[in-house]
Length: 283
Image 1 (cartoon, rainbow, N blue to C red):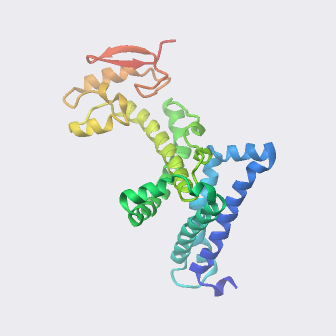
Image 2: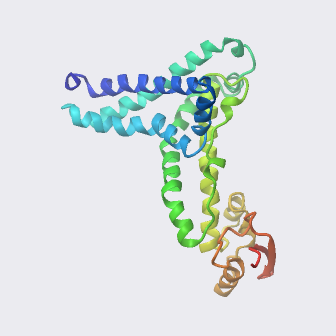
Image 3: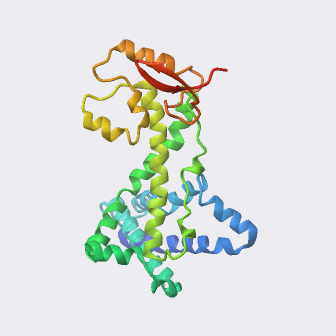
């Protein structure tokens, strides 16, 4: 029977109920007493959140092409399976938004983010911009996968700090009163996305300061990068010498706890190359 169905329709028809049932379970969990609430909380923080995000975002896009390529004889079945999963995801989002808004009609009468932004840039531009932004989901998922798979190795090999990733990668905006349907789903996306990117930036701070503490020749790049690399002001100037770099590395790192030069764990200060930097306190 599956071989007789077009691969696009096969995956499209499977994706929508799978995702809607998943959201129904998430809504149900907090109503199952303390065990359900505890499970709900675990799914709102890494690593539980990682599994949930994978289920709703990447699993359909990965499984769709694999399943259709195996069970369908249609040419380009894998591509149709991918498209069916993607369109099915978008459809599920719209359907869930309508259902959630219908269940919370009293809140629709109040102020809403979507209403204000529609007035600012127009309904079409606002919604098109959001759907274009959704294409970045696989990028953030890959970043998160790299954090999970590579950072434990890097931190162990190079004595760099480990992080409680649940403090960074989590979702809590569902608790904000007044977020309904459209507003809620996109706020949750930004909630997850911001945590993933912030943790990745924090990890990169350690790598950049440890391996390459040299300022750039382009002043504008230095100015822009200091937002994400706040210790860039103590890196060696572009017209400095390699001795300046080695002096900085020698003073800033003890080889045991190699955090970036502005990490909160650093509480002592020394002057290197005419600039004061934070270092780990001596044991």
